[in-house]
Length: 291
Image (tube, rainbow, N blue to C red):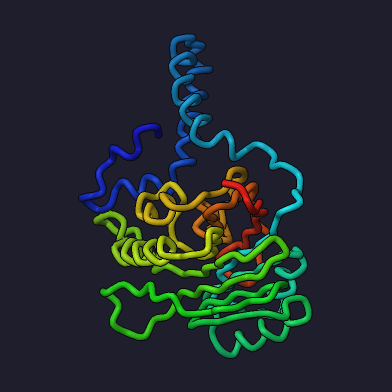
């Protein structure tokens, strides 16, 4: 757990595969506790302290309760709504019921897109869509543009990134919405080359962003520990509290739906109830003006 960065990625991207499920190594510790208790072995119990300390060091903070709402705070929702969602109106209503300032959606396809626009309009008068990703806001949007994060390996039309300036009561922020390519677990390891290339292009765009405060909301098809997302995690803050495993919705194993920030703090992240998607929505509290 502590030395996961030492696992090489050169063969089958085994390091990234391990990091995708890193918190679940704690289950192994629990499983080892059972034979240690059955054997009544003090040595075995003491030896288990090391992995317990390691897991607590890496993930214990995520279990702590988040601080209360602050004066300079935004609430955001991120959701891959699925292009096969049979109830887009119900999904939109469920997301709006959480009361966020911003809603970021991926896999927006016609005719469901028109349903999201119509259903969210009463609470979110400002919205922008580029390709299959969109942003809905309670606050005015400006300078919306496409962000080209398409990897070179993809030849067909592909548009999954946007950037907009949000005029919040606490100042302007640059909000990015992105949907990185999917990864696949194969016999040869983790197939993530396209995802990694897209993450690199997105990282370059965020690095060039002139506004100080940046929010990134999206289905990044990777966890915050996955080194494939290091072009993003090296530049941005991730959630301080909450695991918020979001995929797959039927039995969530990892949080691949992310909220990250520059010059702001993600104080807490959690999942919302399931919708008609194969992802769970996540909602996060973002404290502005802090790093």
